Length: 79
Image 1 (tube, rainbow, N blue to C red):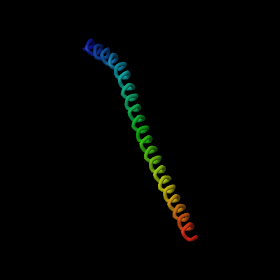
Image 2: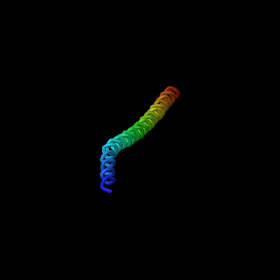
Image 3: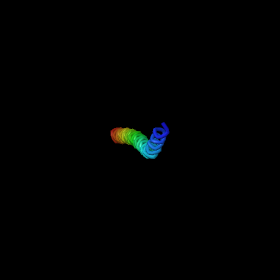
Image 4: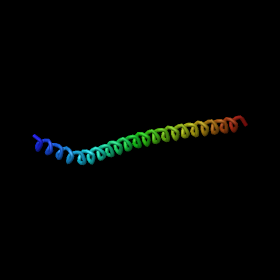
């Protein structure tokens, strides 16, 4: 019985460093995956916001150009 307990203790002591080695590795992998996922989401959101801002600027510039050209044409016609 005592030999069996000693063997079990030895095995458990051998398993603990392995478990501690595997566990931080898994934690690091999970943290890296989460960080990559968060960075990917942030990049997608930033790209979408930039595309929307550029679209709004283009629409505003087109509207301003149309209004200015229309005003110029109307002024030239009235003369």
